[in-house]
Length: 205
Image 1 (tube, rainbow, N blue to C red):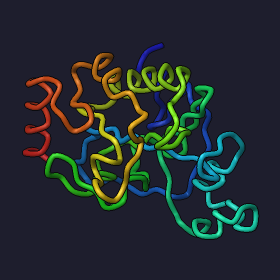
Image 2 (image 1 turned 135 degrees about the horizontal axis):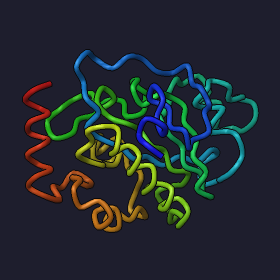
Image 3 (image 1 turned 45 degrees about the horizontal axis):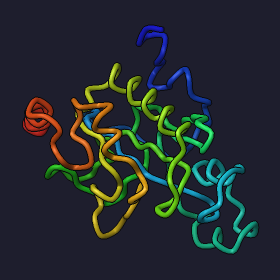
Image 4 (image 1 turned 30 degrees about the horizontal axis):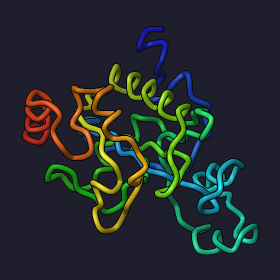
């Protein structure tokens, strides 16, 4: 499958499309250079069901669970959501700005939402992710890399340290770095070439 076949206006053909109203335009001239990884489970530490999709589409019923009362009115989204079984859903076009990182900074650049793609992994800080999720994530990153000038993959914990802790200690950053040696991974440069690309993108944007 060619890149043209794989992507249409920022929508990935291999992902199940679930449109979220929570997005905006990227700033003029902003290139996608970063992928930010998160984890999410609703209710916390519970997997499966439709609650994450309802949350990202503003349809979460606050009466369903006590935890939901505090978040039901929060307007957030990610571009992609990877379930425990490896199923991939997409909520926002990768050409658009999803609302996933909040107050954030990476390599001296603020507002990571402007130039990043957000990927939510169904999980928590305290539980290992599944082999199906890693396999699906590698495929997703391959597809993103083929279409966008991404040079780095970081966690929410790296772009919002002290405020966020995901994807957490259970995420296998070493496996990601081995699979994608060309990326800056987790905030640390994995190659001089990748670092040079970041410096250039900061200068020109």
